[in-house]
Length: 70
Image (cartoon, rainbow, N blue to C red; front, side, top):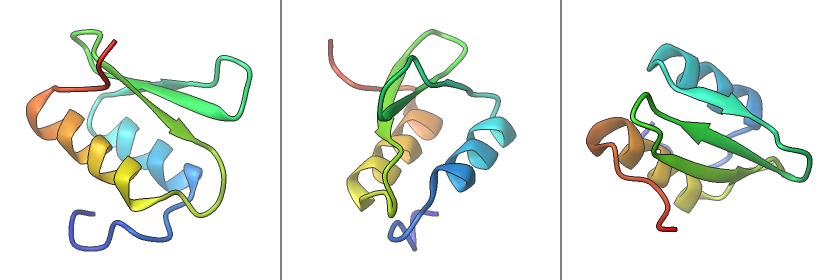
């Protein structure tokens, strides 16, 4: 994932989120919200392909628990 952050699709993000125990929902728009058990969240657009910066944010959420700043 960190070696190939390009050309991801939202279904792949959902699979990874589930594998790492993250919850994911779409509040009604073009973005999905990924949240860890502590409540930290990131927002990922559902457009294809997903830009590398959003995959890097997902990796950061998984590894460090840090998400988007409020």
